[in-house]
Image 1 (tube, rainbow over the protein chains, first blue to last red):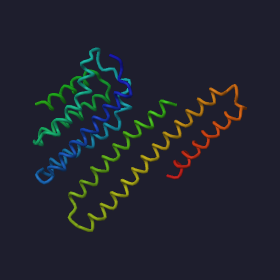
Image 2 (cartoon, rainbow over the protein chains, first blue to last red):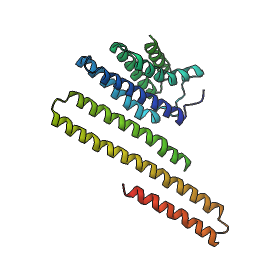
Image 3 (cartoon, one colour):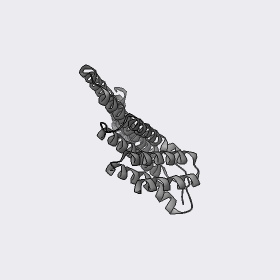
Image 4 (tube, rainbow over the protein chains, first blue to last red):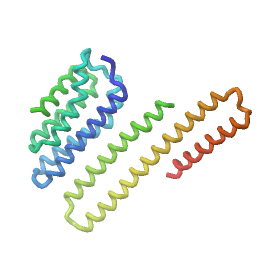
Length: 130
Length: 111
């Protein structure tokens, strides 16, 4: 497949920001029922995702994922699927799991390792659809 | 020039959206933890100041994009008119671009 363009990277960056916003909304919506440790865990993931969003354009442009289109679609769809899931979920454990998987995917993208990217994209999708 | 306009309009705008969300996370968390009414009022004022700064950056980005687009159109006009630059109507048109560019630049410099 062709390398990711700046438009693809911008879309990915927006997905990461939207996911960070969705987790923040979850944290503030459930503020009074969340434990201090859960609030902290969620906040750490939110900042990691927002930082990943800021770095995404420089990290992802020119990235060649795999020979199959399926790998690219998985990456581009994973963050969006995660955001949708976070918006409807009520269990904090699941939200933290999704957020952690998305942070892992961002790290894989930054490492430009196609194998790690594919593995982590699947982990995000699995967490979001579990 | 088109690529530069794209970077300014889209990527700078994405940076602003991230800045706005960072501000939201920071101040909303502080507001949730605050108990003192005067402290909360001060926080709200600081939040407003920071939001104003982000809005200022947004306006600057829009004006910068206008400057870049005006330069691009002006360059194109100069190229198209390169064999008749001494004609009064061409000079008048170039003058209009220069005037627009000065206005956009001054708006940017005023921020």
